[in-house]
Image (cartoon, rainbow, N blue to C red):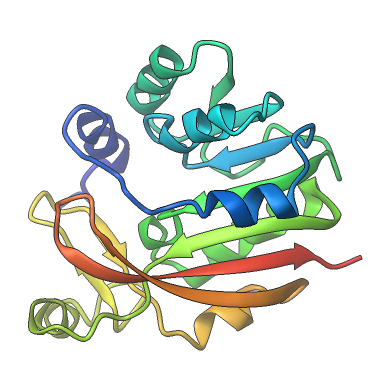
Length: 214
C-alpha cells in the first residue's frame, strides 16, 4: 500500500488542528533584537509569526510544506512574507538569518538523515552566533505512547515512531539524539515544558536554545 500523502494530511490539519508549543517571549526578545531577520520553519497557520509581530518584529518569514497552512498564515498575518517550502533548500541566502524557529517540526521527519539535512540548511542560512530555537517531543513515558512505540518499532525512525489513525508517521526522540543532531551548533540550554499535542493530549516537550557556531 502506498504511503499516505503527508501534504494532504497537513492541508486538512490547517483547518482542524490547534498548535500550542509556547514561545518564551521575554527570553526571546532578550536574545534577539527587534530588527533581526527571523525564520519560522513549519510555520503552520502563522501562530508564532503573529506573536513575533506583536512583540515588535517586522523582518519575519514563515515557510511550511502545506499550501493550506500557508494560505491560513497569510490570512492571519497579511504583512508577513510566507512561502511554501519543504526544507530541501530554504529560501534564504547564506548567513542571512539572525534567528530561526523549528517548533514541532522534527516530529514530522522520522528519518535521521532527513533531519540532519534540514539542520545543515539552518547552519548555512544562520549567521555565526544566530539563534536556533527547537521545540519538540522527547520520548513520552505514559502508557498510551509506550504502546504506540512498541507497535510501530519497525517503522523508519525506530523506537519512538508511530502512526496516527490517518496513517501519517510521526516520531518522538531519544534525548541523546538532540546533541548528535545539533553538531555544528552550540546547545546553550534545554528547557522542559508541559504542553499538549495538536490532538489535545498532554505531552512533555523540550525546547533547545542553540547558537550557530562560527
